[in-house]
Image (cartoon, rainbow, N blue to C red; front, side, top):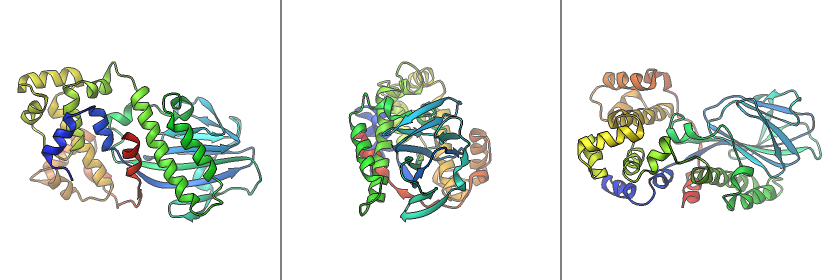
Amino acid sequence: MLDHSSKISAASQGDPLTEMLRGLRLDGVDYGRCRLAEPWGTLFPAQEAARFHFISCGSAWLKSPSGEWLELKAGDAALLPRGDAHVIASTPEADAIPFDRYGRKEVCEGVFDVQCAKVRGGTLAFTASMRFNIDNLHPLLQLMPDIMLTSDLARNELAIPHLLEAMAREVDMDRVGAGGILARLADVLMATMIRAWVEHGCGETSGWIAAVRSPDVGRVLAAIHLEPDRDWTVAELARLMGASRSGFAERFARVVGETPARYVAKVRMHQARLWLKDGMRVAAAAERLGYDAEASFSRAFKRIIGEPPSRFRSGPQKSRDVGAAILDAAE
C-alpha cells in the first residue's frame, strides 16, 4: 500500500489520467449465456451496474437508451457503462420480455445459463453485469457515451478483435473451465474498451478530460481521485501544483469550473456514498472522512448528494473482484 507521499509522487509523474485509471476497478456481479430462437426480445431495466453484451453467433438489434436501434452482428460486443435501460431483440418489431423473467442455471460461481427455449442455431449471446468502484456521478462515467461498441473502438485498439475471437471460442462452454475463462475475457475486454475510449474517443478540447490532461491541474485532480478519503487542504494542493495558494485556486477554478474545496468535497461524498451502499455504517464513514460528529457529516453529505446518508445504507453486496483486468489493460 502506497503512503500519502508515494501516491502524490505517482500522480505527479506521467499522464494523470493513466494514474487515475490505475485506481479504477470493476467487480463482476454476474455473467450469463443464452441461446435464443427467433423471434425474441429482452428488456434490460436500468441498474447501477454496467451492462455488457457479446453476440457470439447470429445477430441482434440493440435499442439504446435514446431510442435508437443499433445492429449487432456475430462477433460484436456492446458496453453500457451506466447500466441504462435498453432492449436487445432479434428485430426491432419483436416483443421484449423482462430479463428477470428468464430462469437461471448456475454453470460455475458467478456464471449461469439463461433458461431459454432449447434450440439449435439461433442467436448465442453472453451478457454480464459489472460494478465500478467509482460513483455513477464520477466525471469519467458521466462523460462516457450511453453505449460503447467494439466495432467503433477496434479501429484504434488492436487487442479488441483478438479478445472477441477468444470469447467466441469459449462461449459454447463445452471445455472444462470455459465459464470462468469466458468471464475473465469479458472483464479484460471491458477494461480494454474503456481504455480505448479514453485514449481515442472521449475528446480533449474541453471539459473534465481536458482538465485532467492539463499538465498542472491534472496532477492535482489525479491526486484527489487517488485518495478520495484524504482531507485535502488548498495549501497541500497548491504545493502539488507548484503555485501559490491564490494562484492555484484561480487556475483550478478557471480550468475545472468550481473551487478546489467544492471539488474535493464532492469527490469525498461520492466516495462515502459508495461505502454506505457497500454496508458501511454512517458513523464509520463520518469517522473515516475525519468528521468529529456524525451530524455534521450527514449535513455535508445531504448538501452535496441531495439526500441523507441513511438513504444509501444497505447490506454488503457479494461480488467477485476482477480489478486486475482494468489494471492490466491500463499498463
